[in-house]
Length: 508
Image (cartoon, rainbow, N blue to C red; front, side, top):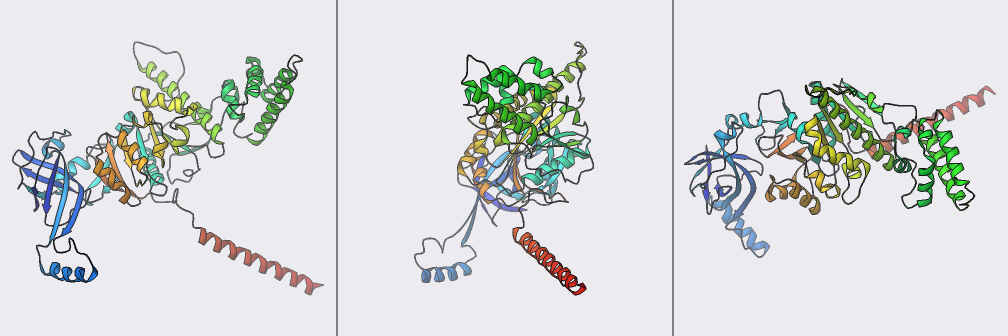
């Protein structure tokens, strides 16, 4: 069915159109050009009225509206449509932009289900359903899981726009396929996911396995506390790392270093380090465990592994995350060597199949302009993980604060509502396949809507992501409801207490 025509100046990648109705941004249309049918994506849409243009006051507007209502030709529906390629080639997985732009007067047709199904709803096992196209709602929206494991993924959105739901949906789909997912849960949002194959782990750090500077971070010794840093470095000897009573021997060594008669000024700093050790070993006894020799061994293959790091301070979480990322990358390297017929690796490895790692609150661990342990290893995985079957997913509500080098290596992006202009600029620089017009639409997306670009989709698309059934993950708190419930419980408790007092008085 013809819904419009190409008008004005057209380009091989963009046309202007006049249409019979207002087209929605994100809607797909077919351009019936002489060289073959082209698929287009509506990137901008305008409605104008000849009668209501240039009015200067209310009375004039009322009169002009009456004229506009009587004139069927008053309204003008204009669209800017990006050309994605020849439809037939796109259905075969190839994007071919026309060398010659469509001629003005070329018909624009509604895209049918038959036109779009092959592109957006492929029938292969690596393609999983995550929702439907936002404007062409009868078409399923699928993503290619193979591509996010091999080419990495970023999920970016403001708080409350559906990031956690999308992560949960991906986890659920990976679980159905017996895949291995490691999800670093910074706010304890995912432990209650209704997934059969879920393995919730409390993150642990073995202080024996750290170097002195990293241990200083775990003990929360400030970077500019040079004397304390030096004392810990001198005290943290190979003998301490092997000692059965790790904390006691480390404490004794710190005391010995501080008792050096040639550096009497060190005594006070040594006492401060000992206080830090005492505080850490007791306050974080469940996290800092010198007897857990293989924290990675708690991760189970073929499961959704939720690694709870919510009890750790920011520095400790950074150290823990770096340790797990390092060990996972090293393990996958060993596993790859073991599969190589020419190189027989004698080292033990834990995981045979690919692993996908998701980092929540990524701006905390891979920040722009700051070096962290986790950032170093995340960067290595972003560069090298593809070769060893280790994929990286980063999730954040602050794209502007994420290291741009790592973000640019994310081969696929899901972008939800983003308002801040500097966030939009960061996304634009990281994703060449998303146009400025689509970027400008990010402010108008609703909860659960997302722009998908990159290698995990055949074409850029605006989709609505289905809601995961079960617990509302990452949802806003119902403060009013909880206050009312708390008040009701207090009232019941007070009345019960008064009844008990009255009964006690009567018995006396």
